[in-house]
Image (cartoon, rainbow, N blue to C red; front, side):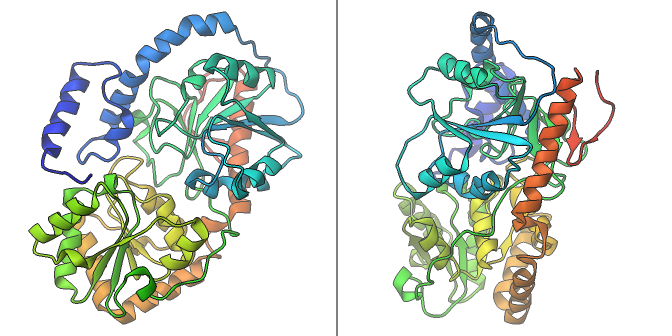
Length: 452
């Protein structure tokens, strides 16, 4: 709702709860967007959130008594677990990866507990997977039994602690190797999963102690994005409520990611760049508060333009009208960032120390635009201001993005699939050899000392 007056109070209460080790009181998801919360605090919160659930699962795991065989076989059997196998950001990012999986080496199954909207994406997913299993009508234990009966070797959770999650299924350990991937930008804590898919920018050297999982490093960005995402027709500025002239700053992140600190910078940009506007995603809960906040900062609230939710194709078409995307912090743009880069709109970000705060920097690194990654909010302002007031510099940057779009790793989904598969193969090889999870890199490079 962008009511920021009590941010410090709630941050203090969160920290007090962590110090008191209060189990299950604060959802880890909430901490991702709270300024000033460290990765270690996020891990502590996740541990506390899951501890009671893990304890409760002990007897159930014993009763289920899943058995695994450390014997090499033919294809590695992958299982992807999610409620988002329909028209959702997760599926939009993953669909081409699923299609590129090497079926000579992998058998790929989906375990869906979400809505069947019978839409185009749902049908495409059903066609793509070797098996598409709807477990929405099953209990967690029943779903775990089905996954185990199907012989899944590596179970990949795509939800974490986001809406409608059933990550509790992972605590029953229906498969020998468990992976945290893409859907939740942080640790699940409690040693729920063996590995977290990441990249060197997201989790740099020295950050491993912020995660309960062993880190599995892709060489470029952790985020998949294909090359077939259709871009709809671009409307006129007038059609979407934008002024005919003037620079368009844009942020289509959900409102809970917008903090007072970042909004201060946005309003400063509006004040210093004449005739500019800030294009935001419509939010019935936050719209009035944001306009009031702009007014309090001396900005005409009408310079905030709100965009209605649109189907992905139409959204990508209109997104091309933006001149520059302004990232949020500490919870970055994720899918919205790669959407912008895909349609040719640059993005400026200010990374922090947590996974969620470094995603946009990961994407910019993978597309060869490190100059848009800033060190602090003052540098963030200066970068955005220079691009908004120096049209030649802005044009050169757009040209560079256009050149890099299909020549750098970010949107090379075929190579991405091979790198991810090499991580899966490394995980499986370690399991077969009776070795514990450790940090690994694509192409089977094990980092550090392998624990037997």
